[in-house]
Image 1 (cartoon, rainbow, N blue to C red):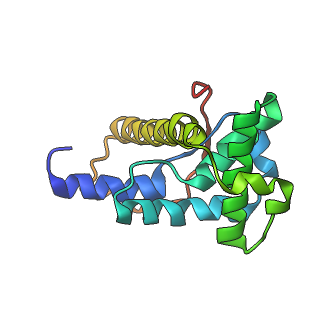
Image 2 (image 1 turned 30 degrees about the vertical axis):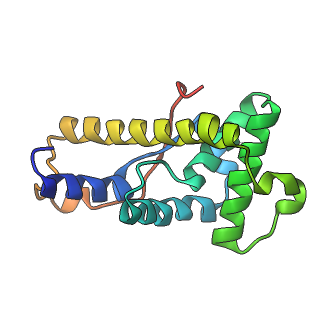
Amino acid sequence: MKNPFEQEIFNLMDVFRSPILSFDPGWSNGIMKEVFDAVTIERLVNLHKGIELATYPEAAIYLSAVSSTYPMDGDWARIYIHVTCTVFEKHMQRDEWHIDPDAKTLTDYQRNYLLNPLLKDIYIKRRKILKERMKSEKVSPVTDIGEESKIVPPVVQTQLSLF
């Protein structure tokens, strides 16, 4: 970005226009609408806090498709349960921790060497896709994009290269 103002506009566009990445979008039909709705809210929170990571709802969506496609080892299964139950509790007031009460906490290894790199990778890839879309549409963060390009909810996009 050329200046701080353009960077801030791009960050807001990232919140509202970046895709929600999924390992396989065919599985996204089984994910509850509330989880998708939570993505934008959590992206706004992360932007406000200066956190440059994907959100737990994004991780839950991504890992849901992975778990439906491939078997997960114990660490990834625990991470999937942790992020999903956290999203359910925070955004839907549903306590689902009975599935695995131990998943309320993650080990340092699970958090620092598995989950956080996944969140960082999703964050980087979604922003890269947004930049590519902006270039192909010849849209600058500070350019009037017109009536035909109003902000619409993000779409699920296939992302196979995270694992």
